[in-house]
Length: 467
Image 1 (cartoon, rainbow, N blue to C red):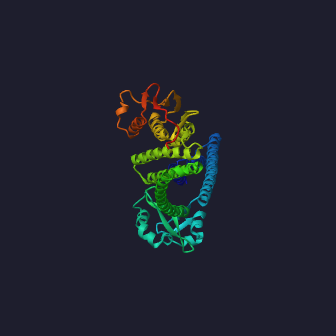
Image 2 (cartoon, rainbow, N blue to C red):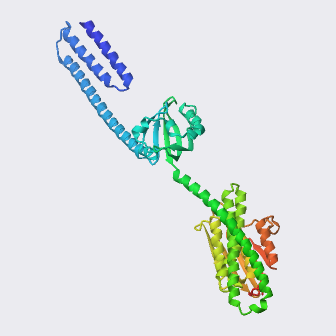
Image 3 (cartoon, rainbow, N blue to C red):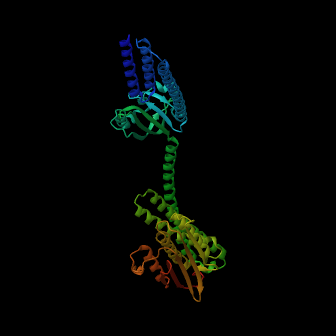
């Protein structure tokens, strides 16, 4: 009996140690120790040893009961912890399931044999199939024959585990009506701990509206180009007609002295048409810039747009004004600066502009070259004076000083270095500034104090248009 008890004790202790090693918790040890204590007390009672005091046996058995109680509490604690973990796991699974089902894109789980094991409501909504119908289908059933020829080799690479980076493409997928719809498709693998694919996630995003919009835009561009060609032909014919009409009017000048009102209307129409013609050129340059990927080419096209816009703005002001011989230059410069800020995407909270040329009118002879010159100077300030998102201010001032017109364009930016000879700098913009200054028989100087300031002085001309 003693040997049996000893053998059972060894087995129980071994199982307790094995359980401790297995689960990493001392709970099995509590019951092993309790069994050993009970076995010892039982052995003492069965042995022939004379017991004079029962207290040791009571203490041994009490210690055994204590270990049993501790073990029971440990088991209850583990059970409660497991219940909390299981509850949290269920809640997490419910949240993941709700997120999966309510996602804004279509999502499906694809098995290694291409079968669809699970899909969300958006996936069914895009294709029109029910979840049960999709469960009986494979990935091949959703892709058009043309799409299979074009995409399925790469999809098989992902399914076979040869390309774990996934595959993304725009393709047409089949709907339950037999029709097709454009979708952005992304297929990726879900792997186990060893990196082997367990199943695959297929994401569908309906891009049919975007595709229709692209088709509509292509048609619109084609229509716009056709209209531009037609309008160009009309303008060419109009220009020819205007040349003939002007020639006829010169021959009949003596008989047209009493038709001043008609002449003013005609001149406004000319300015209007020239402005529209220039605007078409600006639009063509804009479309070309949109299709150009070279940054330098885009910059050249944008600069050309701003230059032509400065000339178009003069004609716009002339046909909107009651005075066909001169324009309000304050209003003109405010519009010019606003257009340039839009062209170069200037943040108005970072760079501010102020214009002060009150009560200053300029003849049509000077308006276009001065406008072009202002365009170049302000453009240079926007492009070069405030690098690295610096803040600053640009001011434009103009006034009559005796028989001269004086314009000042100043910015408080980084300035032009002292060693830079701007008058001989190989720059299209500055070459244009110098050429226009000479054309107007004027003078332009540079001040490098607190930034950059260009001072333009030109003769004041007769405001009347030539006859």
